[in-house]
Image (cartoon, rainbow, N blue to C red; front, side, top):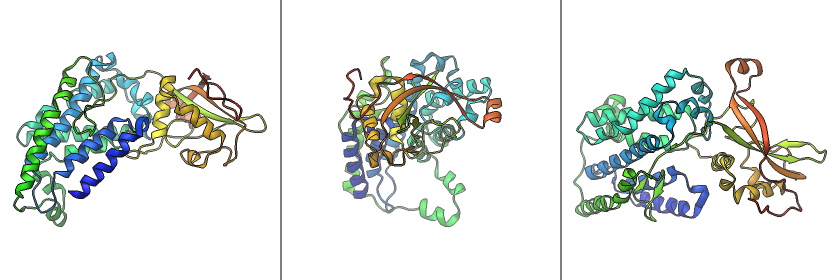
Length: 382
């Protein structure tokens, strides 16, 4: 328990000072899960029922909040057409996303309808007796695995899988695990619960119940916030994802000018870049720079002030910055200038894939901000 407490405090401190770079919903989710994990106890005692119910309450808010934000948000969620675009325009596609995008249109509508059922109806089953609670959690677990296969969402899906797995009844683990492993992971007996720990668990439950008021009000509000914290310790939060779905994909391509007057492209690790580079699987690892590049392409306000500073670091051939990239066309040398160009990306068709072996087709849209040179100041219009 002490180890979990230290880990939670350390990560919370990073999230609180990380600002934009640690502003993703799964950062807060990890903080909340980490805090609850402190009170699960050790191998000598059984996990308290109250804590397990708090885990279910967290899973409920995670799924139900995501379902409500979709229902209240983009119309395409209501007419079941969002997945005609989502696999192509999601922040960081995975290696199978191209194939998911090319599934038949009717199947996309079935996917959306199944998602609504999983996020808006199934979560209520978590609080019913077994086996209903286990079946509900199993449906969520399968849905999360589908999301793992179709995209790169850092550790959001995997953490949701862990939460759902905690609801599965012991009989499921007895069936899944071989005998020796089962004996270690699913103990048949547990020691007596220490009285101070009982008091701590009860106080925890009361605290979560009190702090749940604002997240519940947010869930019921027409102006529901998608991912928000209501206390500095991020103990009880509200969640949601993809209240709106972009229909067109734009990407920012960073280029450096060599001494011969040729613009050469920098390559990123996860985000789309070179048309022939097939997306990689990075989740549950989180490529923060690549994710923020996706947000920056949506609006200049998401790019200030860090993108001009990134261009300046590339102009200086800053080694720590270059290590964030997959490809430096200058091999550590300084370019003459650095620019950002906005491109329109779309998945290739089956015919285009066979002809070119490229999964992306792109065309330039125009400059994304001014060219950065050694003599230029930070632009005012950002």
